[in-house]
Amino acid sequence: MSIAAQPSQAAQANGMAAFIVGGFGAPIVMTMTATRANPNKANMYQSVVRIFATTLRPDYAVPWQSAAPQSGTGSGVIIAPGRILTGAHVINDATFLQVQKVSDPNKMVARVAAVSHDCDLALLEVDDPRLMKDVTPEQLGALPTLRDRVSVVGYPVGGEEISITEGVVSRIEMQRYAHSERSMLAVTVDAAINEGNSGGP
Image (tube, rainbow, N blue to C red):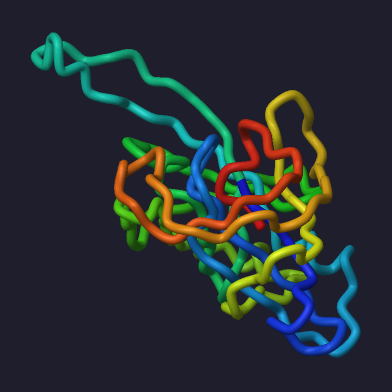
């Protein structure tokens, strides 16, 4: 799940910001901001991608047998040329990954470059040059403050198009992450965040 925001002091005037969320029911674990002088939300949404994951999870009850492959979707955000930041739980146990840009029927193959299960973050790599067409990568930024307005951007289950909902930051504190069960800094927002939003901005 991801959240895009306009913090009161965290970014430059008229700057855009985004937060990466640990997962469904998990807190935000990282912040980003794009410091464009005149941000265009339509352009920002071009940096948000849908992630398709084929997973093969081990069955610890019968480890000598192969479990049936499963498929799922999540969201991610382009932070550098060919690099997508998402949640570790989105790509956990994945054997094949693809990403798709907004309003683009084509899917591009992705691979895991790095993963941190402690903070529920993963970095994907995509070699396909189409990923960066008409896209400006988002940039890391400052932590939001209480009552900052936020917008959740991603691809929740139940639809094919990108979804945007709004809310405010209501709490910033240490909480236990659902994916790793480790206590880390978390940001609570009152925006609607649904399954499939995981990993987006």
